[in-house]
Length: 191
Image 1: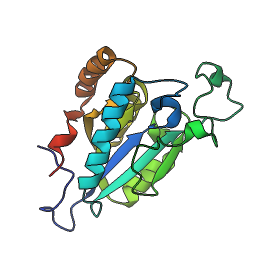
Image 2: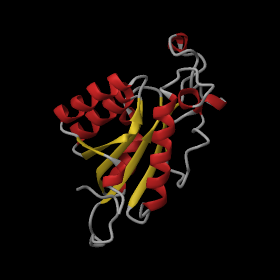
Image 3: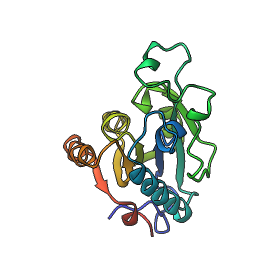
């Protein structure tokens, strides 16, 4: 059983990080421009908030990652102009607890396209990641692939990810296992 809590870890043990991807107004709110399944997003946020309440933040870095697209990006047409930098839509969903200032912006699916994320993880001796957020088959998947390629141990919080449909989510969970990630539920990491 994986655990984020580190009560039994020695002081010199590598830290862990909880990454929360794209839990932003334009994807998770009732007014979302690219709406995810609202039931899934509500459950995801509730599970993450519970996890945040019970996580030992001395040994776990909590990291928020968000899409911030340029106003002038042609692809905005296909994204319904969602998550434009400096707009309400790019802000974190107000239901999500914010417990750190660790925020990394991205404008591609893979969170590691922002090199500052990997630099931060390495400078904090983080070797293991717990990944959550959306979209399970896109941004979450791309980030997991890069994290594994870089050499991180990756755990996906299956009840803390979401997409546009349950069917897509189930198929994507199998893909995570195939590339080397471990699928766990948030209740299995809370002590």
